[in-house]
Image 1 (cartoon, rainbow, N blue to C red):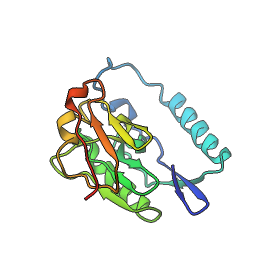
Image 2 (image 1 turned 45 degrees about the horizontal axis):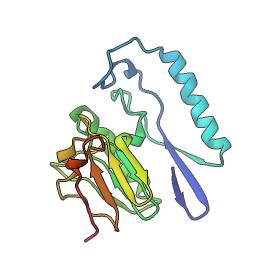
Image 3 (image 1 turned 45 degrees about the vertical axis):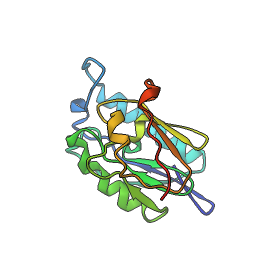
Image 4 (image 1 turned 120 degrees about the horizontal axis):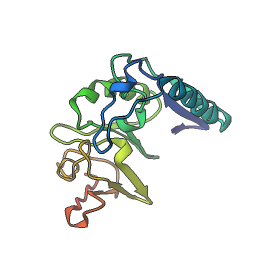
Amino acid sequence: MVSSGSARHAFVRELSPALARCELSFLERATIDVSLAVRQHADYVAQLAALGCEIAWLPPLPDHADGVFVEDTAVVLPEVTVITRPGAQSRRNEVESVASSLARVTRVVRILDPGTLEGGDVMQIGRTLGTLESGGSPAAGCGSGTLRVPGPIRIDAGVSAPQERRDVRAT
């Protein structure tokens, strides 16, 4: 969700017909009830609207199984939005449509190659962003030195492994 002025924008995308082929790292593959997922997503969007959000529909990406998970493509902060670079190559084409839509309402910065980060792996506590180490957000990827955000904001890479902490400061 992004706030610009008094408006709160919720960026959403419809589910892909390829949802059953989504990326899985830590779970056994199970059958996805696509009709249930469609109903749940409609309920999710309705709840965002009920909370007063202006719903902004992103272009559909029917060939991208994970495209509905737009939160993986950006980390939204009051001052800036960080456009991520997913670890899975199959997810990288999801980013541009989100970045261009968000750039209309907020300032954006990007994670650059070789860094990787997925927004769903980020947790915010005050001015500290912690990342869970995963295939999409390895500890080494966050500390690549390619991220410059207004600060001080600290990114702790690999929350489960504090010795892997990397500090990223504004330059």
